[in-house]
Structures are given as structure tokens and as C-alpha cells.
Length: 336
Image 1 (cartoon, rainbow, N blue to C red):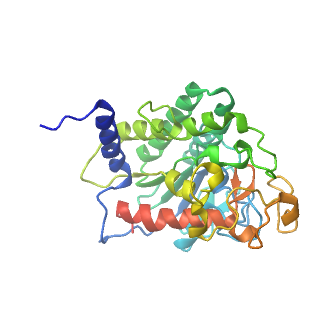
Image 2 (cartoon, helix red, strand yellow):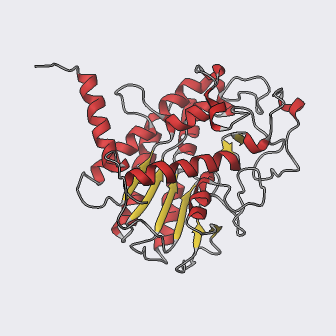
Image 3 (cartoon, rainbow, N blue to C red):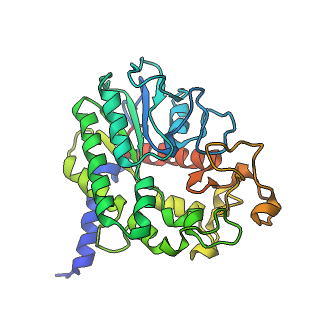
């Protein structure tokens, strides 16, 4: 009989639990693929747009597919726009976002409550939730694991309120690896120049676990959602998306302790910000010059860079991540 260590059993259990939400079995085809009647987004900068549908916490390029949420919406033929009022009733055939650039999980829960006070989810509505990054950012300087746990609980409860009201398609994007964002990197030319670099190890540990401690936002949220939505052979209403490995690849450099994996994804600038002014005031007219941000490659361009400013990504990076979610995660879950 083969004996496995406790840590090995924990990894196996975690993988099996994750399969409940991410659809590890795969799906070669879907008999009835999701065709959304509405798209509604909640959360932070990854879903934040203005009333025209333009990204605000990014480089504002006047494009309507420049956030992760709006990119996914655009694949289904929707233009995601910011809701017109807190009491807005979302009509069939439309797409609206309640997201705010610096929203925490608690803020996201409030957004969902606001939506539910005036709307009833339809069985074919697609809900996109991007939250947790701001919670990790706030907790990292003091390694506040308690705050991260509270945030994961608040988000889980909010997600349950959606499904209890009838939502059948809820995609939840886990936080990115905050340790890979410019303020947490001690890189020459990063603006601000590694402001929180001394907390890099905390940021990584709170973003994702490399052992069995399960104190990161990603692990805690995964555990809580798997408890709330146990394995079943029927349709799972919540699809939890973990882009940690993918994000590490598109930002991977020798400076971050790995090979220069970023170039394989069309990225020319994986770690330096492209905006000379802070979001949400960054446009194509306020981009940093190559000499300003000290990225010397002649291939440098905001159109193939990852970061707009601080923790906020470019339209290009948003489209990479949105396409990955649709092409990989939705496929594996049998949603397409």
C-alpha cells in the first residue's frame, strides 16, 4: 500500500475541491451553451467602466472591451456600461456594471445588495465578479490574515445571495498576484518606485498559498465556496476562476524570480507602468515616455504592456485575461 504524506493528501484534497467549481472534468462540447440574456458585473477595477463603456481604471482608450468584464461581455455581443442609478432595473439584452475601481470585497457585497434590491436574476443572466485584490493590497503591509479571511467570508455570503435569488451563471475571478504589481516590486523606474516592496512576501502569501496553511484570499475563498456549493452532477452556478499561474506567466521576468515568460504572450513590458498620471486620469495623451519609465526596449508600447498604473492593468492585459477566462474556464465548465 502506498503511503502519502499529510501535505500530499492536502494538495490532493484541494485539487479535488477546486474541480467542483472550475470544472476539472472538461467538456469537449456543450449541448446548450450559455447565451446570456443580460450581463451584470460587480467588483473592482477589472470590471469598472463609465457610462459609455470605457475603462476608467486603466488607460482610457475609448474602447468598450478594455476591462476583464467588458471583454467577456463583448464576446457575447454586449457593451458593458456603468449603471445609470442605484435603483436601475437592468433590461433584457443589456449589460451593466456596478463596479468601482478601488472596491473591496465588502464594497462588492454592497454592490450586489443594491442590484438585488431592484432586480431579480434570470436563469440565463451572466454575472461577473472581480474582487479581492484591494483586500490583499490593504492587508499586506501588516500581514493582516484576519482581514483577508473576513473579506473572503463577506464575498462568499454575497455570492450566495445572488444564487439564492436565482442566479445560475456566476463567474468569480480571484485576485491577481499582488506581489507582481509595481508598488510591491523593487524595480528601477517603477512609479511609485517599489513603494510597498518591503511587504512583497506578505503580498504573495496573502494572494496565494504555496503550502497547506490556507491563509491567502484565493485559498480561503475557494474553501468557503466549495463548502457553500458542494460537488454535484448537476449544473454548478458558480465558476471560480484562478488566474494566478496565468498572471505570473504574463508578468514573469528574471527580476521576479522566473524566466522571461512574458514575451510568449505578446507582452513587451511586463512590470513597468505606462501612465505618467494616476488612474482614473490616464489617457493615451498622458503616457510615460520610454526614457521616463526607463524601459529601454524599442518594442515598448502601452498596447502590449501589462500595467497602466500601480495595481491597474492595461486594456491589452484585460483582453488577455478575459479571453483566457472565456476560452479556457468557460470551456472547462461546459458554459460554451
